[in-house]
Image (cartoon, rainbow, N blue to C red):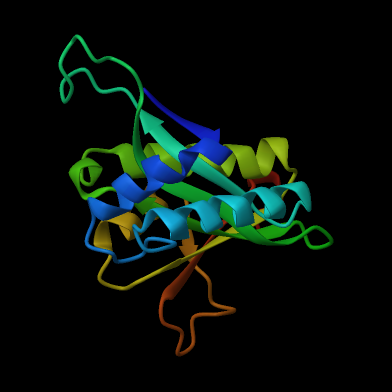
Length: 171
């Protein structure tokens, strides 16, 4: 089971622990508690202003956790930002803890983020910027129908991929 939950004021400690479990690549802030508190406050301000939406990725995997601890555990962070309400577009950022990479969590979580963007926010396009060496993320995006964005690809690093809502897909 995988779900997204909007970041809450009390999530700073969970984020600090989560980001400390990784290699630092792609995390939205360093794993220091003070920085994570500022990050959560900033995310809250962005959401109130409808400029960004940040989520804690939670998963419940009974194969990885003892049966006595079936509660949802943080597995990553995801966000929609750089929202352009007129064009109905946004950029997306995602970070999955290393222990959850390669297990299918990434594609499912990105799918949930896209569902939120298209169904709940009414966006028509979401762009992900992905480092070329991040093959797991690129594979997950391609499984979700993402295509390299030719309007941005020339000389761009990281690589831009876009996902359009089905009824807005250009042919």
